[in-house]
Image 1 (cartoon, rainbow, N blue to C red):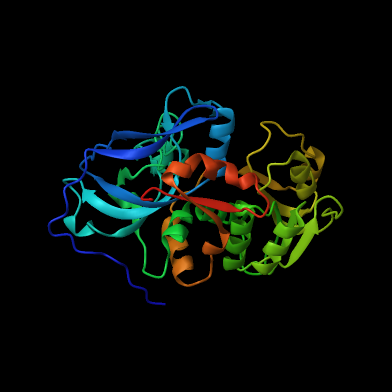
Image 2: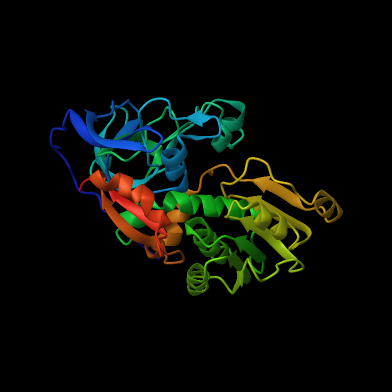
Length: 353
């Protein structure tokens, strides 16, 4: 499929403002709208005027708890790392032709020189600077900067919302890569929230023939069946043990779901832990050993944006279906609370509103 990319020529771009609006998290449960300096543009960076930002579970966790593991909000922090926008300015070493391009942003900055980066595992870079992870600011703001090669052009038929949600799609794609999903694979996915639904669509795009989804919410299970799952199981009443699937992807973070899911995996199968849950979980070790089950976590992603953009452009993945709430920048706090409301999947913040 041939797609075109919107790129508005800006031979004489407008003068940029010195300040911008941003939603600032000061501490656990305390957020305000403030005026802050526009971010400094380095030579290899582009300045992106943010059009849409998805609300992630990690944003909510920082808002509700003030920390995730060792990352603590001890200084004012701008949340948000799922974003898209338009290039408003370029650094001195970036092609000026990029001005005006609609882009999806991969919200991380690896060092590019460490052992992990050189091995192609830049997601594991120990010097990584990731949006909305203390002390690095995120995208609940009118402008952000990013290295030019981490701002990916998006075609006309991909919405701003879908472009922003390439970030969680990348998590789903990376999980499927780690799970070795291929045509004919049988997959179990625990959790029918946003990441679970995305994992369903990713597994389908990779060719999985059977996709089982578990959850305790009937509406979410029905939604999963409408968008790629072949079987829906209620985690309260339906057992998954003995399914002998090729791979299990946990998108719930629930310890019981993890244990049950492992027992659903066949010999030499794979278990991929995505969901944010307890720091420690008791596992059926003898079951894992006797079946030589391969178990791995997922930490972000590597080199997923090009594939994600192609899947969206070709209509093989639909991210617009996830958007259930739209909020202005001044409503960012309400957006962080929206996920607890019935029927809500994904909230999106629009910094230009």
